[in-house]
Length: 192
Image (cartoon, rainbow, N blue to C red; front, side):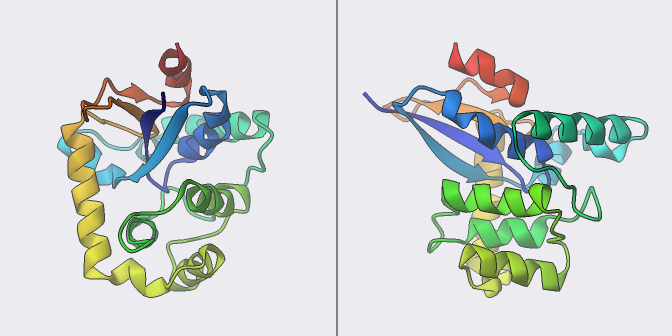
């Protein structure tokens, strides 16, 4: 019997990059459904700010996430600015595949480019480069359908109880969702 788990992410999150490396720890019958949300909107809904928006927490987050990424055997190189504005890049992935969103492999590639190679995706040149590497049309980043998909996804994430990224939400055969498992360190609880 196949099981589905939604993997909620935002391209701004180095922890989502790390979580991707741990997906293989889940049982073989689990299908991962990548779901993109806009973290800033989720945080605003819950009256929070991003962890990298406070010093000295930002410095710790950078050190911890680079250590975690490297400990998983992944290349680790932050983009030139962080936090950066992920909106255009998020919209690009949200609108991919005729509005179905980016595949898991496309998500892995995007994160590898951003946090493995340090690609800036918050500039026009960086966004075009990201789109080309993913085999996507850069115009998806500004397409009304992509904007609407990201907004709809974010609303669905909030309705599912997601409050940060990465988040994992099991989906039952009847469509029932939950509970939410948050963070890379929440993956052990999800597996159990």
